[in-house]
Image (tube, rainbow, N blue to C red; front, side):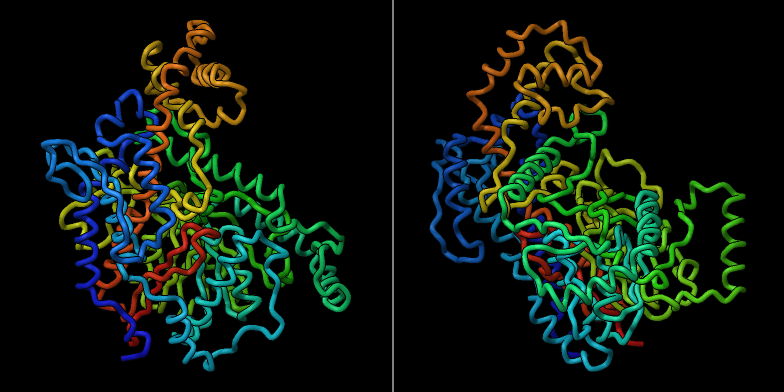
Length: 614
């Protein structure tokens, strides 16, 4: 048994943890699955909570200042209503309403990943992998400075994950790395430049393809200038308040923690949380913002690849710009095979054959961005001409891309290790969710493991949406956009009372940020939904606001409960993936590892696995 295998947690232990977590979520998921938009129209508070909202907020505030792993900590129990003395995890067995907030929060702490005690510490992983660091060349003597090419969050993620990936590559004695959902190529670039690994970045987004082609054009024009400038800057500047871009021109570096940065981050957090809490349980509800993705500070911006979910562009001169032109290979854009005509498929087959006959060598460069739509069944050798033993990585792979990455790892003998960090749980497909449509590939994002598939377990879209919320940031004072959530819920009442159209194919979108008042918000929303706003006078609209304002604390308290349950739902999703890997006969080691700081990067957990040696 290798040192790495000695750190492996047995499958039966993981199953036991999952069973305990399931028992907790069977009861508490009722809160997570309640939709914020329906808060007043469906009397959500009265149906689920038997405690005053002020009491709920007080206990949550106290709990946020306590360490989750502390045992026998002081609790504040709510009084159980007379005749309702039987409860489970704080819920009354008869009414199913929450009667003991402290008990619920205590259970939520115990069933989050830190409380379950199933994570292998990152330092332990790196220490064990360090035994193999003499096999392949280590990091370059002169470290790169990723802060110059990406924001602090991305830099934090890339530096840590690249170190783990490089150590795994040394452990498995491989030189090729395949980044599925590579997006803008930040991780790929760092792995190739800092560690000398041969990296293939596969992404399916046509937007990313266009961006990569444009960056390649700029790269060819400015590469030599950048290399000359970097030498000059190292010799002369030595850091300081100013940095230079790829053109050799000075630019002001943003001051970390500055007022403008804090204001921008706050605005992004509020918009992201509103999106998470108001996205619909069904596509027909007129709720979500225009971009159906909780990107930004509360959850990580997704990469793209297997499932073709695009990520937003970031810097006009991303980290790819430090590569030499001869290190970049950009093939023609690809789309999912199902969308191609028969003629196009035949043409591409001919191109691949001609490419191989011509002897074109993928190994000529260290980093090859490839645009392709892949699944677990895709033959990687059809995309990568000179495929060798390799490892698979994915940094914030969106929705079904993360489980597809793990399936690809187990199915392909040439893949010796995997390091996957997922995000956007609300975009996962659930096999046993009643309202879920049939999967095109007949492979579902959740559940993956036989242990959870056997009881046909499902979470529900609203619960998966809740799993995207960032408890650590809220606990640190990030807060929730309560006013915008309140506006949306009251709008739902107006739509029900006056338009019989509170279910619609159209979306309200991000109207709140453009509105000067509640009246202005309602009128903008009605126009966007194509409804007759003349039916509502200003005084009538304002009357709805005044009627429900006293109940705003209920919404605040309820959403804080949803945030408190978020780590437990995320834990079940990740343990399901871990259980799947441990069920495979060809996997020697698999673990959940906290890679990133949770405040900096809320989707901070990665799945790491290594194949058995042949």
